[in-house]
Image (cartoon, rainbow, N blue to C red):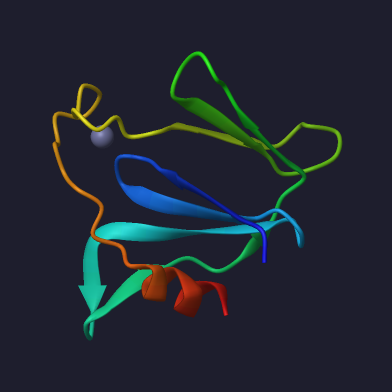
Length: 97
Ligand SMILES: [Zn+2]
């Protein structure tokens, strides 16, 4: 499985680059001791800007539908939250299964 994992301020984005699908695991929310994740959604291309923390998810081939977000910086410069990654690899495997 080819997973690309990006951290934004409010969620962890998991991209399955082989099957071209992605989902998000929402931070700070747990239900029944399990983290809340969105359904897998198809996407066309992921574009990560190497100069900034921004990334764009193109949802269709024509690039008419897209989602923009940006990565959480470790010092919390963007959102003021100096949080650490609490997501375990097991969480990711369970979500990606
Ligand atoms: Zn942040």
